[in-house]
Amino acid sequence: MALVSSSDNGAVRARKGAGGLKPIVETLRAAVAGDVSTRVDTRKLKGDAAELGMLLNELLSKLSGLLEESEKRNQLNTREIELAAAGLEALVPEGDLLRWNGTTADPRLRPLLDSFGKVIETLRVFVREINGAALRLSSSANQVLAASTQHEASSSEQAAAIHETTATMEELKHASAQIAENAGSVARVAEETLGAARSGRGAIGEFIQGMQQIRNDGVAVADSIAKLSKRVERIGTVVEVIDEIADRSDLLALNAALEGSRAGEAGKGFSIVAAEMRRLAENVLDSTKEIKNLITEIREATLAAAGASEASKLATQSGEKLGAVAAQAVEGILSGVQETSDAARVINLATQQQRTATEQVVASMGEIEDVTRQTTYASRQATGAAAELTQLASRLAELIKRFKAD
Amino acid sequence: MTPKAESSPTIDIVLFAMKGVSYAADATQVVRIDRVGAEERALMVRGPDGECRPIRVDAVSGLRSVPVASLRRLPVALETKDVAVGVWLNGETPVILLDLFQLLTVPGGQ
Image (cartoon, rainbow over all chains, first blue to last red; front, side, top):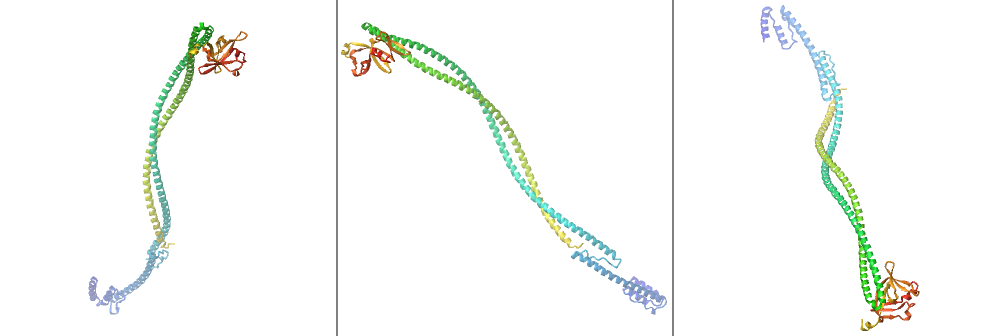
């Protein structure tokens, strides 16, 4: 409108100056409207207006040529862009990075297509690297999966072993407790045995003293028996004398009786006395015989007593020896029991420490078992992740394979 | 003792034992009684030559005055070299009467 207004003002001035610019104005209006094929009819113009009309026509002719050339160039560019777009579009479904053709006659498009070519070349490099990385990733993922699977299996085996070890340690703990209890019992029994052995030692000492007393008494008894034997022998000697006297008296009485018998009536009284005397002698002989029997019995009893005394002496000596042996044995028992008691106490203490240590080990094994369980769980998760990673690597490899870069 | 026995004459006999058998002999044949060994006795009898010889006996029980009626002679057929001359009935138990003089003549009789 401003142009029209300006044109209107110009046309007014032209009309006023040249007497008619209407063909020029109409041509300009057509050019402004986009029609550059319209030309000014200069034949109806004169002077400056005709020259202006020719200059405008010349301008429009050049402009039209430029427009035609521009149109051709646009069409060529459009075709090249369509080809490049087709090449780019072919990348999407087929992934073929080798079909890119970036040649162009238009120097203005060349930088763009060169840039696209560089981008596609970079993409090819990326695809190749990604393909290699995908292959390595797949291999590594497989290795990770295998390692995770093995680690999971190892963790499971380790968990089972730890569980078994824990159970064994539990049994060991109970066994240690049982051993400690038994060792305590042994220690108590050893203490009791020690007390009994000490009592036995005292009893054996009293026994030995008793044996010594018996031996002393036996010696006294043997002395008494020896004295008794001597007295009996003395009595025997006396009895022998009495017996001899009685025997002679008997013999004398017999002869007296014979004499009395030979004396006849006169010897009657003598014979009676002789008979009485002989009766007395026989009584004495009977008594001495009885005494001899008694002496024999006493001798036998004395011999038996002496034998018994000797046997008692030997038995006492044997008893003393046995007592000494028993005392020595009891001393050995005491020493052994003392060592046993000490060893039992040491065992008791050691087993208590062992039980404490075992309990600590059991607790530690429980913690290890928890950690192992967590490790197993983590390994299982890692295995799952590795499997998923393997799948992703495979998927990535499949995706990358869609791109042809080599 | 019956009255008849009391009135009968008596004789002194010496009672002795040899090898477990009781014997009796006329006391007048014994000069004395000696001891032989530890316990044995010997009846000292005077032999025909006048010497006293011992007759060993186990024991001498003593002298007794017995009625002659209580003595019995042995049948001749039973006499042995005139050593056993009869029996003395000690109640119902017969005790052989020996002739010590004859016994001295028997070998081994001393």
